[in-house]
Length: 251
Length: 312
Image (cartoon, rainbow over all chains, first blue to last red; front, side, top):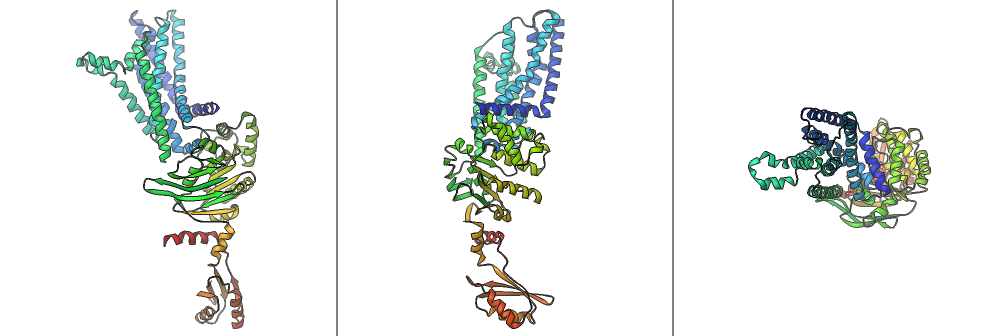
């Protein structure tokens, strides 16, 4: 456990030691701040019908930085270590492959969650200024942030997998972005082909992040997406572990 | 301390290490010598637990490197070629991280840090960011990292490569000081380095061990094939060479005239040492002799003859 903590500490240190971290933080805050502003304007125009939380988590201003941020966070994780050759010093220390993979994964995930911390302030400010609740019920907050965590788990895992596949950070970022976008747009299949019938709609619901977020941010909890995200995350982390081992043994 | 048997590593159809076997006793400094691509690094990576072998076995400190990899790694301090480090960390930060990773207990951390910083001469750069360090300092950080957890065995891959002569001397002194506490396996393709540092040399070429002995023995072994140099003023080079060739124990003579002097390169017959006969012959002929010597055979020649023989 001590080794895992040491590794995790190093991962977070490495994440914050690079200038990219602050560029990402800056633009992420800028865009989510704008998203908040857009949400407030929307509420001003259309009173009732929607809540601040719903307005915040279901716009293109939310999804755009959300999808973009994962490749930037995860591209470094394995690729840099392979490029620098530090993988050799790392893996000749008495640490297990699994410890390293988990530490790297959780390091990226924690950085992602830190990105979301300031957003909590928006809703506090909203409530203080307008004297109105930002959400219909507490479940709305819980649902929206549960979805932030669940989606983050899967997309971070995909990003880590991409990073483990290559020595080149740019290649890792492009692969991660392609995988995440592919998965995201696959979930919009029902929107793209409205004539496809109820079966397609039914199936795409299982992996449509837009649908899931819409439901969860209304406070509607559904166990199906939870199972989907947790199990596919496990699959991606498992694949990352094997790619990591395979590439080392091939080197 | 280190025991290697029939160790083989293949990459596809390329055999990088081909069934090598050797052992290193406690307190020895063993040098791995070979040209680039001979399989030195691959062997060291396998010993350090980074690469799995295709076949064969290796043991360090009584632990199988593959079956009990974690246990084995605890006993090994490994410094890879080119010393990969995290450029974003400070020296102390990096060493503390590595120490924690290698299981140095918290209460011993301060003491270990002080020890390695002092031993490796890193006292002044503890707060420096590694990315800003010179090559020589990076090398020392790598060494400090390798020994921070007081391993029984140090495996150093090309510890002096890319350093200037001053830095090379410093790193060598450092390694020599480490001999008291560690068993050391180092690789190099610089021959004088091996002669200076190592108690034993393993010459490796194309994945095979070509020779394994002390530097002295190796030199003597090839020494018989060494040559004698005679530098004298002779009236006629050709006639003089023929005269020398007639001496007992002389195999071949080549003469090179340079101004008024002639330099003879004389190869002795196997097992013979004709230097005294050559002296008497020269005295008898009344040649003014400027030099009669037998240049020491360097490991360079040992190496050349050992690896060259393979090619024929």
